[in-house]
Image (cartoon, rainbow, N blue to C red; front, side, top):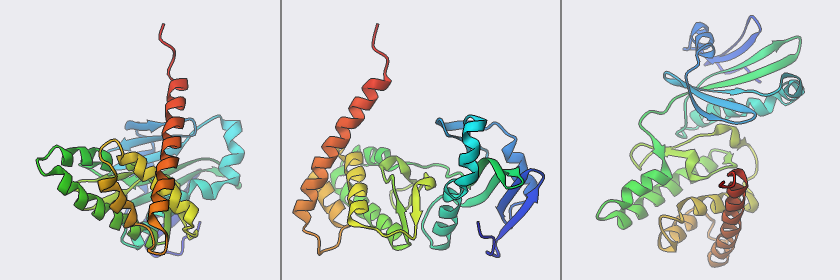
Length: 262
């Protein structure tokens, strides 16, 4: 991972290889790594914790099983850090990068952690839409809200970043005017924004808001994020069909994960 940016320091500290913002003391980085914090999300491969003003996403798993993955797929574990730097450089709202850390020695990497600033007082865009719709003029306000969100997504794409999981849970806002993209491990940099990738994003977004509004709101929302050269009516019908299939898969997966009632 390149360290030629003047605002980023790369250094070795014991078994740690650290990339950090120059204004962030290395002692602060090490201190954060040793605090339990509050678990926000935990999966088989990663655990995400809030530690004071930062969020720490750390890889985890069986040591022997993950050793090769951590070493050979270093760039994959650095993806969130790279994305945070890229979005900050292009003025796209997202958690501000703090540091990225690798544990290891002699070319072998055993663990990774990405540290980003926490975004206080935010909620995901789905729940903010619920707040809007609770107002007396909610439907009218929702049109403006979705148009502003579409413009923010277009800004993300124009910055050369593609979010592969652009569901509403991965976009936060405080005020309905500024939108922050999270789960930055899912962002691809420098990749072509093909029609297939655009279509996948639109299905995710359509599914996120469908339980709150219909095509009166969602059709202009999607139209604002598609080139004029694309026949929109056919596009919308394809999105709706794929959303039905996506929702059906989600229901089946949820039923399988829920133990049968005794």
